[in-house]
Length: 186
Image (cartoon, rainbow, N blue to C red; front, side, top):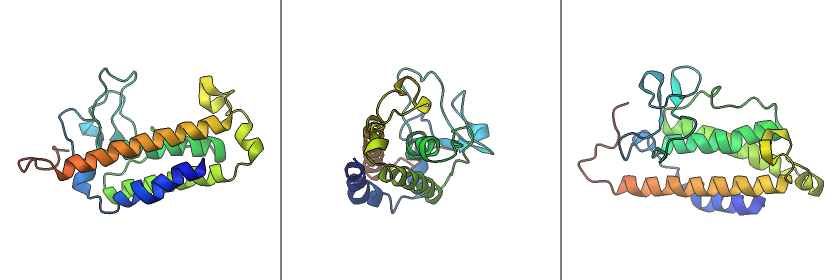
């Protein structure tokens, strides 16, 4: 299970982000995108974060859900997919959307992503057969009784499908019309 995520991450997804620029990171391909932005400019009613920077969101999620920026999607993978799970299952449980200092630069977003990916994958690597077959526990709500291996596979799917979304946004950014300035006002 580690190899499934690690191989895709190391050979396909993460190398594609090495030249990510701040403009591309915050690029809004359509109006009304969810992104990471200054609190005063938040578009989600429940936008969360510490300090002056927040991640846009609403709960329940609107139908249809908003398009998201690379910044938002990387933040979601960092905190919602890897960070909260790594903290809850292998750390002190102290990671939340509300308690995150969201980065408005590509370098900051990559550092957050790398930090929580490494925390998650290191934790999963540490599991033996008993660790993979034990129940996930209360942090996983209605899935508490599912084997931890099921959670690992779920996180793999989540990370890989969000990585594909980011990759598509990068492809669209490089092929945007010349009249697109690259990002909407922040």
